[in-house]
Image (tube, rainbow, N blue to C red; front, side, top):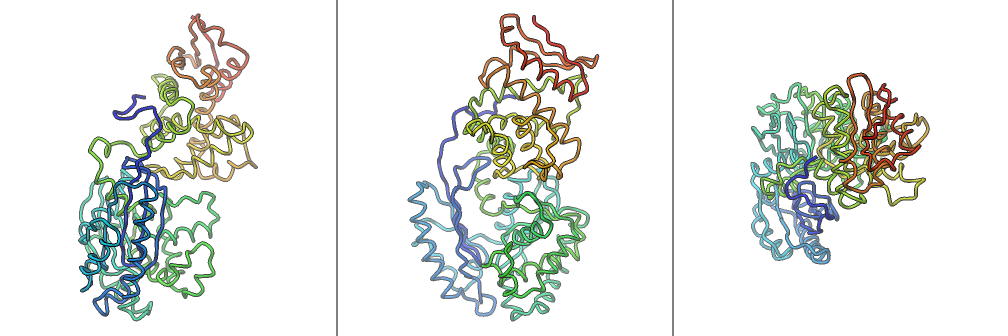
Amino acid sequence: MKRQKGFGTQAPKYRPVAVVDIGSNSVRLVVYDGLRRAPTPVFNEKILCGLGKGVALTGRLSEEGVARALAALRRFRALAGQIGVKEVFAVATAAAREAKNGEEFIDRAEAALGVHINVLSGKEEARYAALGLLAGITDADGVAGDLGGGSLELIDIEKGKIREGVTLPIGPLRLIDMSGGSISGARRLVDEYLDSTAVVERLKGRNFYAVGGTWRNLARLHMAQTHYPLHVLHYYTISREQARSVADLVSGLSASSLKDIKAVSRSRSDTLPFGALVLERLLSRAKAKTVIISVLGVREGLLYSKLPKRKAELDPLLAGCWDFCRRYARSPEHELELCDWTEGLFQAGGLSEDAEQRRLRLAACLLADIGWRAHPDYRAERSLGMISQAAFTGIDHPGRIFLGLTVYYRYEGPIDDEQGPSSRLARLVDDDALQRAQILSSAFRLAYSLSAAMPRLLPKIGLALEANKTLVLTIPRKLQDLMGERVEKRTVALASLMGRTARISIE
């Protein structure tokens, strides 16, 4: 695998950047480890200020909300300084742009935060939400819906390209105001706006990408109901009927009953039924195929827009795995060599591999050595946890589990682990993915037996599949002392998994 331009082997430098998002319901600070293709949040705090509460009725931001927001922004300024943030990007959305006293609030907010605050138009908010989605799901095809306290942005995305977008004033806080807190009244309002929106028609038979904290809470509830074993929200996929069923259930619950549900954030119990109502009515009309959760939205879209073209075009999964590799592997250079070395299994006459499978193989190679510092008895389990729960983007849940299992088997061997920590996750991938994970992990075990995780050796050793169903390991004569029982056993084991016979050639 060629190292992508700008990718050094040293651990990535810590250059934190921050985004402050002043929404209709919450004011949030997120600090990321750098302005990079796959940034990792290192600090995340939100305060539910309810700035937009009452705006639909009075036209003004609530005084209590303003006071709480200003206090939060002063705290965020101090925190950013403590963390060492050099650059803060701040945006405000629906409530601030629509309220009569919005400009006055922004002046006070800029004084409290110490930086300029960009008040986004509806179109800008929709664009950043779409960019955030595409930063983490590069091939998105469908309609993205970003639900905030005051508005819903719907953006048509076709094969990774941003198309039509619209902003609708049906955020939960606004619905509560406009309906007097009545779910039936809110339903009539939501239906009226959705019926007049052409983007909804473009969702039929396609994916709906749900963005925003309200809908993430619905996903958490569905995970709890189904005992889903991987508590990672990004790319969590639900069928249309399942999502609609959960949304319909929650829209009929009271705030007090929601507070007793562990999977639901207590701070969102007042607004969650109205947010669930929006999703239920949308899915009823749009006939979407599936609902896919994106944890990336306006904040990540804003950062993504700041990247130079060269970085923006990088694969987010491989960029994230490369950062992991540089932080945790003994030799990042060795992992790049491992990418090339395993290519021998998939060349002409070898195993089949499509573009996505190849991408996952390269990612697995970059992650293959991240557990080495753990106690030997816990390396497998630790690696599985780190990978399956990492803040990776650009990967769905089956792909994430494939990576975790591949490195897990690298330490445990290709075993049938019906009771171990990998068993529940393994049920979420198909048999082909499990077989590939075991084959690739077996190749890893052989590689590390030969190289001891150090670079500049694997390129000298050949690994190839011949047309006569033979796996051939070729070792130069000057390196023949590397041969031993372990190398022979692991070569035979790899060949057996692929239905081949093994041959070791000393040349």
